[in-house]
Amino acid sequence: MSTRAYHGPWGVPLALIIIGAWSGHLAWMLTADGLSWRSPLCWLHVALQGYLCTGLFITGHDAMHGTVSRRRWLNAAVGTLACFLFAGLSYRRLVVNHRAHHADPTGEHDPDFSTRSQAFWPWLATFMVRYTTLAQIVAMAVQFNVLKWLGVAEWRLWVCWVVPAALGTLQLFYFGTYRPHRRPETPEMAPHHARTLPRGHMWAMLSCYFFGYHWEHHESPGTPWWALWRMKDARGRASALAAQGEASAR
Image 1: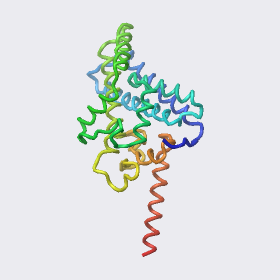
Image 2: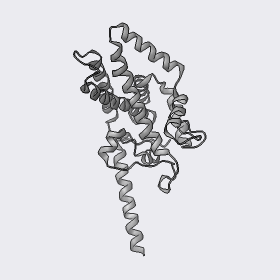
Image 3: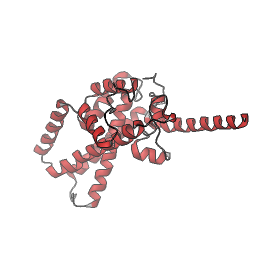
């Protein structure tokens, strides 16, 4: 992974906003009077919580690249908290796997990639088997039962906590792994074996916190998620200038 670039003091505040929004919204969903799983409004909140779950992992991912803070201990603290809140994940284990992904994207040693099948569901199954651990399952089960013991209705735990985590996982996998790295490869994916997803910045933010700008991420892993759109624009301008130069030379 490349050397980290400094992008100002925004990493920690943005991380705290995402963690705080996820925590506060979840607490409200687990305790709000009158909330019913039969209500369409409830499922809008579930979708929002799923999006915030995606933000938790993106925050942890940025910490892996050292872009949350220039202080290593603070990066590790934020990353550990964000990954654990997301789904009981081990931050240290994720760091090891993510380094392997950047060292050999789509290669046989890439833990994120499926060399056996490029179909969505088999690839997702392979991905989940590689990343799910017994310790994670135990941690989630303990949290579930503690919350239930404290009086939270079981349907709220499933609908407001488990389902959003599953939605966040699907969102991250589809927009951050499957579509960016899926074969067949095209010339614009070189040399990172990663493509940037089309459409504008608004869609990129809503779909996966700009993580669909995946070529840019592999080109500059030290660029935080909230600055990837600038790299996308700079790459577009460079391509346009190169095309103009070629046209003038003819």
